[in-house]
Image 1 (cartoon, rainbow, N blue to C red):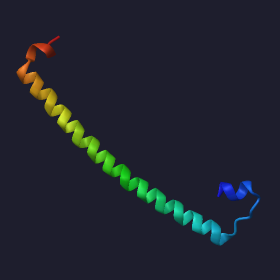
Image 2 (tube, rainbow, N blue to C red):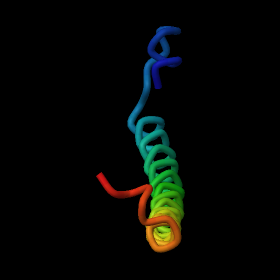
Image 3 (cartoon, helix red, strand yellow):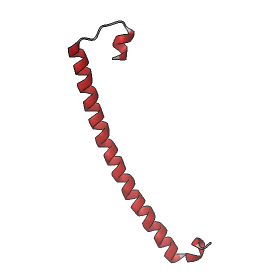
Image 4 (tube, rainbow, N blue to C red):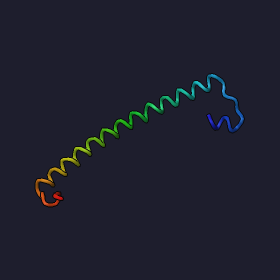
Length: 65
């Protein structure tokens, strides 16, 4: 839309509606990808916690203060 405004082209209702639909689809796709990334981060955090717990069991002196 900014390209159209910069060039001085007027945007009619149909053009505006089409741009809005495109942006809604793009946002939906990005939200879906974000959910996948969040799930992967959750899995990595679980692995990290398990790794730390295992290290605490095998080398308890390292984690004492």
